[in-house]
Image 1 (cartoon, one colour):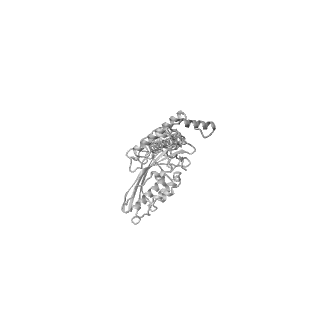
Image 2: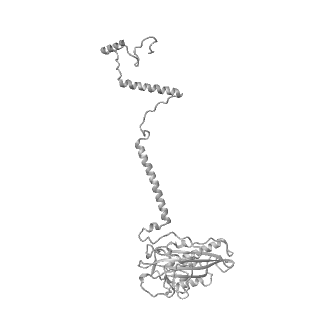
Image 3: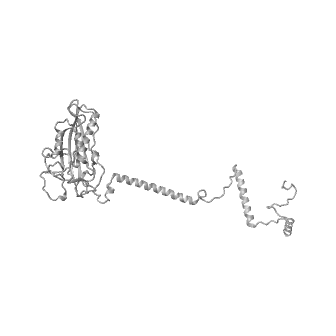
Length: 394
């Protein structure tokens, strides 16, 4: 059903925006008094003003949209700031970002600090008890040729301790034990193949370890492994060494080849013996290769039942050869001794019982050996055989 008023007929409900006639107003009053119909309430002046202003704004916006030739976009309802995530979420998210940024900065600082300490340990050890006398503890690079100068003194004058047995010694930066004995790159020489030369170099290294670093040898036991590496067909050598171990004295001195200490007198401090030196090889007579090794070993020791630390420094020069058994009377892969010599710092050179005997400051005054001052760390020259001097440092 249509609710539109036919053309030419008055509307039963006048337009709210149009004027109201006296007749119409009287009829509305009558209906209100009698309760007939719904009497409209006249809008307040403020409501009429707001309605008129909103109508004007709608008409202006509609006119503007027509001028620009586009439809007006419906206005989005107003929302408070942060309505999508909420102010509380934004605050928490901001704190999380700050924490992540702070953690990243702290992580970088920690990594940088570790790198600095690794490169310069003294920056840490200088602030530790009894640690300020060690400037650098990083191992020295391997030695590949005879040194041209004596090693410098280490800073600090404190005596070594059982916790730091190499304190004050140049050996503090030397390699530990067998790690200090490195073999050169092998090549064919003297009619022997590269592999044969490499096996000869490894056998020489093994002999040095067994003769100077093996705990059993250092305790004065028979150096069986070292002896087994020597060629039994070499006339007299192995027999002479075995006899010197049983009956040392005179020309039979096992210390010319082995480092040995009396277990009833002294013991090693810890497990480390500092080692430094070099090894070379060259062609020998056709069908042989000759190897030369020059190494210094530093032994930290205490008397049995004591805690004062002393160091004995032993330098050894050993020349050996490996021969082709088809051209020599030799055992394949075994070492033949060409020559050996040794210098020892801090031992009683008056005793010849097949053991090294270090002296300690607590021993009191003794008879000073005759001979010049000797620096056992200066490996540029050799002390004459049989000469017993006074060591300047250990």
